[in-house]
Length: 361
Image (cartoon, rainbow, N blue to C red):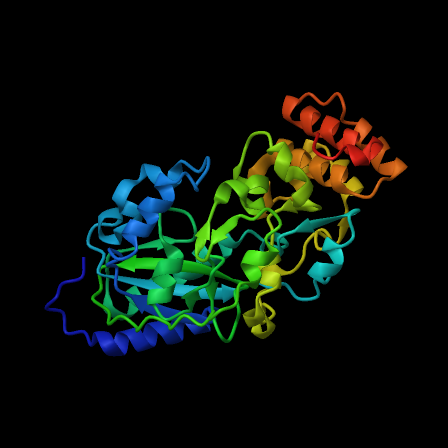
């Protein structure tokens, strides 16, 4: 652990850390005080209302999620970073969403798994700091542990929490990843960003499943990103039609946000589109066997949901697609799938395709 008597100019060091971070490809670097006591009541209220759904990990760490110094002993500062991910040359999101025969995948997942990309860069930043001042206590996070990353990022002057609960910035909108380094260095914290959403409620109004139940309050149990990624069981029947052709995640609240007119295209080659996932037919994806799925999704964040959930999600999208004989034949190929979960969603989809007026009865 870093000793307080070490003759280090922490103000100057903070300035250098931000410069090193930008050299490593982060668009912004800030420093936050680890005291999140003001945010703790909001977290506990959200959990008490059950809005975390089946994400038990959100609650099992107790107060550590809102108390960085207890999660990582000795933490005195949090270095927060953001990196743009909007992929270059990706098919226009709205064009894909309105074509029910195509698959919509959240734009953050079109390229390489961001966990790997950010973790490597954060470790390099931590090593650069240690090369400058010697050993210091630190731990790197990339959406990989109980960390209130949006709260920390807003305190580090990287942006403000939007009404959809994502971080927003004036210069880059919200199409970016966040990461953190917890450190025992007493770095001077930045001033929190001023919220700038004003009276705008576009993100709330556009949510297909009404998951944003109030400004800054998300019921994950209704969120399409949760349902297609985190939720492991049957997707509630009453929410399936609203999912449309979104098979992995949902970007609607970001697509309508006025601040995203300032969003930047990522310069990271790792975030470029792979396997034509920005605009690909549902039928083509539904035909992938497990070996193909694992091969195609190697190095992708999508791999972690597994082939069974992948097919479940696509089956729902096929059920929502315009009635088409080819789609029906595609669904029939998995009507006797070995997975009961897949069979259930395929049966529902076939009912929608063969009797579309049946709806949710």
